[in-house]
Amino acid sequence: MILANKWVLNETDTPVFFLFCQLIVAILLFVIAHVIGILKLPRMVDGPLLKGLMPMITVNVLGLNFNNWCLKYVDASFYQIARGLVLPFTVVTSIMFLRAAPPSKRILLACSIVTGGFFTGVFLDHVTASGLGSKAPTSQSQGPSALGVFFGILSSMSTALQAVVIKRALDVVDGSAIDLAWYTNLLSAIGTIPIILLAGEVPSVLGLLFGTSTNTSTNATPGTFLWGTAVTGLFGFLICIATLFSIKVTSPITHMISSAAGNGHLENLFEDDLSTPELLEPPSLPSAKIDWEIPRKALHSSIGFLVLPLYFSRPEVAPIIEALTYGLALVSAADVLRLNVAPFARLYEKLLGAFMRESEKKAINGVIWYLVGVIFVLKFYPRDVAVVSILILSWCDTAASTVGRAWGRYTPKLPRSILFIPIAPRKSLAGALGAIVTGILIAFSFWGWAVTPEYIPNEIPAWHWAQGGWLGLGALSLCSGLAAGITEALDIGGLDDNLTLPIISGGLIWGISRLITAVL
Image (tube, rainbow, N blue to C red):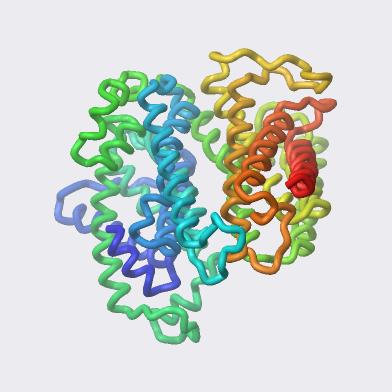
């Protein structure tokens, strides 16, 4: 399946249209099976059904596209490494959204090994290819594609989320895996159409089908495309049904392990850990609350993933700030109406209320503070520091919330002040450690891998490899993590952390980078 996909993706620059055609093949196979009596397809599509399946369809469409984009930008042999964080993400999402029991030591050990393998594979491959260990990597050296690894991480997250939302979506279709498979392919195909337009693939699609494109970057022929679509569409159809049945009768974690191991030997490592009642049958919770928590968390984290491609594409910062300022004005105007005009408030909450927390419904929307913080760091900080501060805002805040919710009850609460620094109430040591570790990984990955001459030419960042090598990178990463963890826990006059987190952490990191440069 991977090789067939890579065969087509190597020959075409229309990965989204390729996915759309794969879904169409699956839909046709469903219809054929219905006509000859192998299965019976549902015919009802109404508002409650669409609302109930929306989280799953959204995650599925994004996840499938991330898979294709990842495979397009990396070698087939590196594809599974780029997507190597599926297990840790699956464990985290199961705890967050299915309220599964805390993972055992064996599962945590497995997650640690998998995570270590991911970073080892990415960094060692890059070091071997680019000579990162030296202070002067050559421009001709090539490591794994930054975009490929980026989409691989997104793919890992979406795969983990998909396993969780499928478990909930089965309730919407009364537990029928066949019905869910049908709706998944049908609605995902419809949802893929606007992405084809947004991705700018229309000229390439026309060139592929009718030979009208002037794009010479692709050698795809209709024959290659059709054969690849037929083969991958057939196997995708079978995998879709098998996945839904697997998750229906097991748990997301067990499904992930069994789909990776195939023969079940890997499951023996965990013995009963993957078949406990808490994982197989999570307690019944209000589905609407759980379902909407997933896109809410994903939306908060997704901003960081949007920042990285922008950074690599080297746009001018001024137009981005201008666009964000227009967005801020629009959101602010809508918020003024929401807080002062009751009919508008009812309409607003009906459309977007699921993405707001209860505490925000009578206060200023957190999106406003988010935009103000992002605009500030883009305007006043060096480009690389601004990117890291936005990544900290997107990921450290989510990590602190996730880890704190899962393990906060096992660790002490943070005091209300540390060395006269005010700390927000109900902050746990576990959540703070989650933010610190995430901040360290962000800084280490960004300055140790992304900010290198072969990726970012003609730029002098706040810190680069020549300023201290591994020692400088380690010191900067550790200090960045501490800055992220401390800032995330701050309580500065009740200000929203969407505002304080990027501004304060970015300022601290900028100052730390200057100090490290001066010392080393």
